[in-house]
Length: 227
Image 1: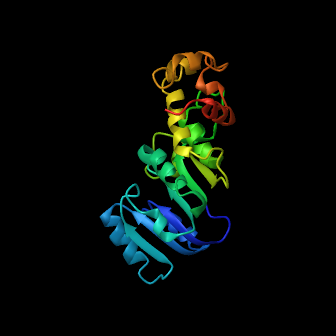
Image 2: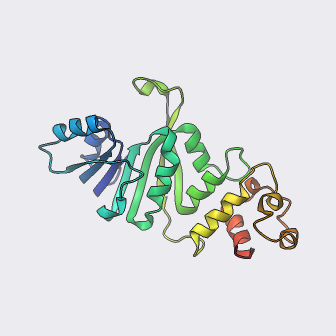
Image 3: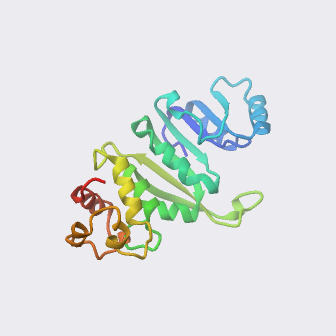
């Protein structure tokens, strides 16, 4: 998960430190953020003599990640909150050099797929808009104890040096409207957000959002009047 040496790696959900041990062979310092107080005490005892480890007891979605400056990020993400964690990490922009996460395989496929796929949707756009995303490999349930009921996958995210628009939040709001009901056309999804006559004039009005690449969605966003 940390192929190049790093000054600092923030680890999300270290558990009992299995990944932490590996990260310490590649990083000068590991900040491990764990929400379970019992595991926090275990980790603090395990690494009490290791100056390169800092254990933080916190909910990752409430933690101020910006306080540590430049970092790489890694972790085995809880399946039910993987998407908001990825969004939070990517929101740090160039402060993050790279993030590598273990997530549910279905989520990994949705994050990495392109237009035309049944898995392509808002999560695909919001993730790939901010970062270059790669699915590195899958992990079967038997690799875990106890085994989960789903396959997992490891993804790599490298934040983009430059975003395609100057108003990223505006673009993501626009994209969320476009994908509001995936089987409906852009015209139907955007009615009530933009004027009907302007929508009708767009060549893409009869298409579905899942047919458009991120570059095409950006181009459409730049044509639309601001709400």
